[in-house]
Image 1 (cartoon, rainbow, N blue to C red):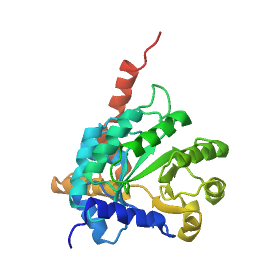
Image 2 (image 1 turned 180 degrees about the horizontal axis):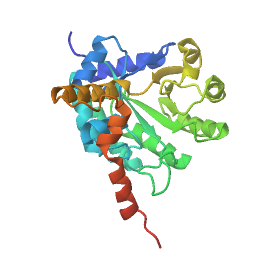
Image 3 (image 1 turned 135 degrees about the vertical axis):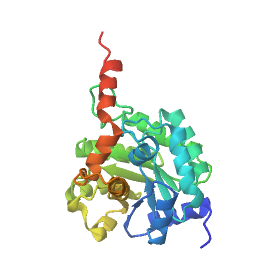
Image 4 (image 1 turned 45 degrees about the vertical axis):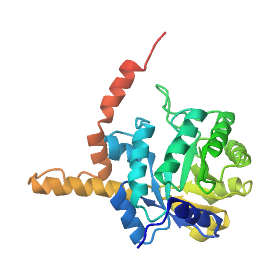
Length: 288
């Protein structure tokens, strides 16, 4: 099968957004996974920021991966991909001007769409990674992203965290991003359909939900009626690959213990998060 051009893949993604159906993304993290997803009939893939951090750095999701490292992985995927891929571009790797650079580089990599979130990253010491920037700054980032793109079919999706705000604040933010020209709204932390309905009634652009398999949101027809076009259930394929690699190498070395470790436990074991916590305490906990 002949590989589609980057523009054709973006057009295909736009068709998903313009449809009346809800599609579930495949977690793609390298060229092979992208080819597998396309062969299995997935309509869209997503390169997660946390997955890229694991794949490229074997590091936890502490906003450690750089734009150039993320773009390199996206380029490898874009070189072979036969399905449109969404890039989880986190906070755009900085301020609004950094967002412009992020858009330029990911567009060249062949990405069909990217999400820009309003999270305050990197997280400040002692603070949660769910702290958000002011909505005005978030609007500036979306406007900057739209200014930077060359191909108008590259979709710019604004992302916010519906699980850490009250409903009125979520509505305020998402309406502001919609008014700024975002091609879609991505939300994480939507609790259930009642929660979603209260937000969706104020929006007229396509929605994308990061649900992590939330059983209270498992109704494709109802999601579609509320404007949801893309659902990200998580990145189980990547974690399954970690588990399979560990078990294969463990069996090869005839190591008797370790088979009981889950993919989550293995990820924790090999990303060494405790080291980063110690370094943060030593270098970031600046006292007056």
